[in-house]
Length: 237
Image 1 (cartoon, rainbow, N blue to C red):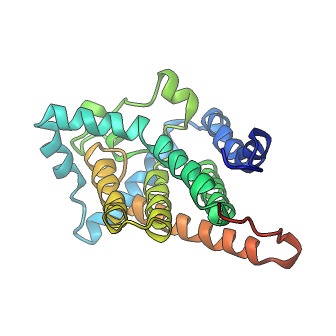
Image 2: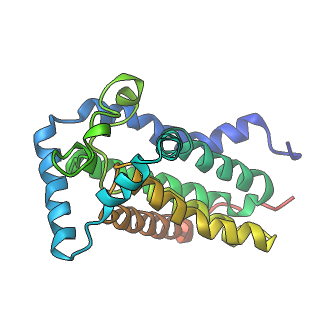
């Protein structure tokens, strides 16, 4: 750990992130019955159909025919999302401390906005809609530990898409090796394909996630620029 950067400092810096992540089980407890959430997703599916762009079930069927690929996508969906985000935050804290506050506040604001959306407009994933071709994975995430940690009706906005953009933007802006920056730009695309192919989201959910990330970044930027909230800048080591 760099001089002057104690564990106490780390806790203070990361406490807001821990706080918004700790709200996920609370949102899970507040999740309503499925009727309203299913209705909201049907509305989104109808919107995509009206545009002639409802192609996600075909993607799922293609992946379903390749079980190892589907399993990899499902595991990645559950276990990779938060660790990747937190790893990038830790890297920024260690290697680019002057940028940490903006990145952290973007994460906090984005998560807070997404959670508010899940409470006010719960939306089921498309795989829960009967007749669309997702019946084999319809019940995933509706019971067990995953159900305790997150609402099963949190499709809109897509937090995976939102934080993939935050991660990509952070690495692209702050990393120096150009191959790393190029890979960062590919990350949101990989996440988009994963969330659609596994039946957890449609592309409109990802659009909602992108808007959520943009609002989160704008909020963090406004807070950083507010004179009464400014603190002495951190010095990169």
